[in-house]
Amino acid sequence: MNLSMISLVALLAGCGGGDSKKPTEPAAQDVTTQAPPPAVDLTSLKAQAENVTLVPAPMEMQKALDKAGIAETLEGLVQERKLNFDSQDSDVAAVRTGVVLADTLLTVKSAPPEKLVARMEAVKKGMVTVKAGGDIVKTIDDLIGEINNLGGGSRNELVKELDEMHAAIIPEIEYEAGEQIVPLIQAGSWLEGSNLLASAILKANRPEVANDLLRQPSVCDYFLKYVDVAGKSKAPDEVVKQLRTTLEKLKEISVKPSLTIEDVQEVKKQTDTVLGML
Image (cartoon, rainbow, N blue to C red; front, side, top):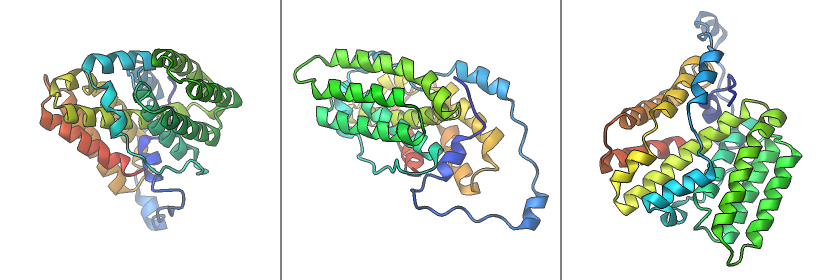
């Protein structure tokens, strides 16, 4: 996966809604005294990203959910967020697309067909906004057709179709929309996925499965690096502070040898806070 210099912090700073005002620019005398942002080690970031699984393939994900026994509970936990995909800011649209994509992938076996269709339509809107290319839009339309014709058919076949889409669209998005879009979509998916999984674990009162599903210290490191090398000059201080607090707390939880129900509650609380910025 290729990376760009656009940080998760920057996109969250602009995620207050399509009509939100830009932050007030600092006075000229303040700008001249600010230290330049640290140089970005792009090679290091790329190497790190290659070892981070931000969004597992759908088939792999479903196997993990089935094993944990929480797959069927996720649909009832999805929040119907009012996300604007008409924004001209493609970075903001990308992270919002990732949120809805996670909702789709995590509920593919349990959501009513009409809800899956609505989520795929939202994903399509996001892909159009980020200019991901006509081939991806056609692929999504084909999947929507599959869902509409699902009837009593097997959801496993639909998971297989989504798995194929997952493998095909990443290089297409990078080529058509630019290499910065993929990590932003993945950021949205990771945040929403972690939030839904934490909610499902809490509902089932099964903290033991959190060890397999929620411990992702390398992902936290990945986004913390983004904050350090590119975020401080692109977002208000309060946004940087909140995001760093969230990521550090999630990292602290991730490295524990075993997670407790209190740890899962904290994951939900922290991801709720960041998702609320969308």
